[in-house]
View (cartoon, one colour):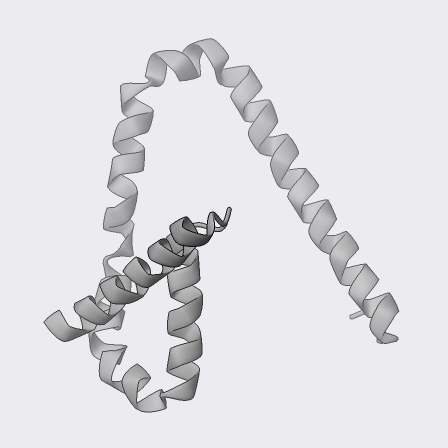
Length: 117
């Protein structure tokens, strides 16, 4: 278990190092996750070795959202004061993201000559 956690943290550190060294706008953990993904594709034995520990981590993923919940409770006055604007921004950005996703899908279908699903 400790070795698997070390592998995960080393990939995160590598991604963070690359992101900061090259001044990229991509977060380090995202680069580390991409590197881990490519490595796991090339080394299926490593994926099998990590499976049990990673499955255990994923089953307790909800614990990572506790700090966000505490932040919401700590700033309830802000939500009370700016609530309508925040709700409008959340709903508007969600709708916009969905529309952009649909547009990208339709563009790819048109460019590849596929049929709509």
